[in-house]
Image (tube, rainbow, N blue to C red; front, side, top):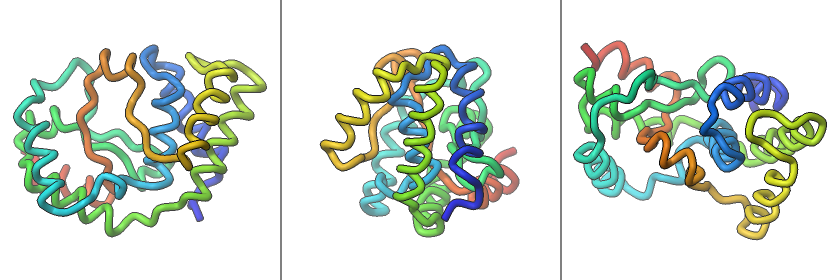
Length: 185
């Protein structure tokens, strides 16, 4: 069970989404999925994690303007995203990031039911009052699509991907703290 209510997660994330003109409903779904389920869906093996990060590591450019190093995904920062570009720019090492990512996948307890709770809570908010780039019809469209697929992890929206070129790893706050205090100069 989450250490905060579904409403608290929506209250935490919604202002961030509203402030970002590039966020679409797929990006909110992805955020909520990661906040409640972690990043374990990306972990196939150590070798696969190393290979995937190495490909990104070689192709990411320098940090983008105002790109944060750490983005908490929930109140209290129990889980969040380490952005690869600023991590690399500050001297972080790919192997250390993979270690933190894998440790996080073992440490973080996925909460599928909590995902459904917050996803439905988002629908209620959007239905009551359109917010940001979220229309209720878009929530319904994505929900129907994801329901047919049994609510899998998704990619960022095409719009967000084109605007931001996201490159990060989902890790726990504990692992992030280790990386941020011990590995980066």
